[in-house]
Length: 182
Ligand code: PRP
Ligand code: MN
Ligand code: MG
Image 1 (cartoon, protein in one colour):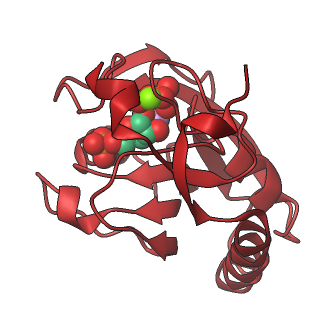
Image 2: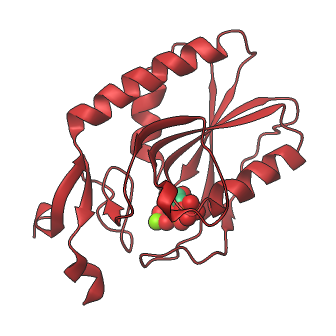
């Protein structure tokens, strides 16, 4: 069973992902060079491929942490209920935080997590996301670093899932609607 057969079209290909990671890595390196040991926090599970590729283009001493956060609980639309499945063990008080995400859609996940980290005393909190889907917003939210802005389509691959499948596709693609309507 091949994964690619369920993809209607490729939205962001492997070469484009590579260029995005290089560009954002340089920008972040430049913006954070005078900050003291920023913490990059990846939001599991979707962040994994992007964080891993992006971090290798950040030429600074950073710490990397993860929080396991979910709002979708399967399906193709956000539940509106953001759950922290696993928290970090590190204190963020007084620290510069860069959250790494695969996608900002309704904005609910990041709105919740940014508020939480600020409440815990983070000095600064910024977002780097591979994909931004502004047409999906329910809560106003503007990520600082964006790989690419995408239209309102349900996408999978490179970390993004549909019912926990397709995360290991090396590119971002639009899922054939018959997969989630059947
Ligand atoms: C997805 C995605 C983002 C979030 C974005 O995660 O990885 O974290 O939803 O959507 P929002 O802007 O509407 O909140 P999901 O909840 O599916 O968990 P996962 O990363 O484990 O797949
Ligand atoms: Mn996620
Ligand atoms: Mg998901």
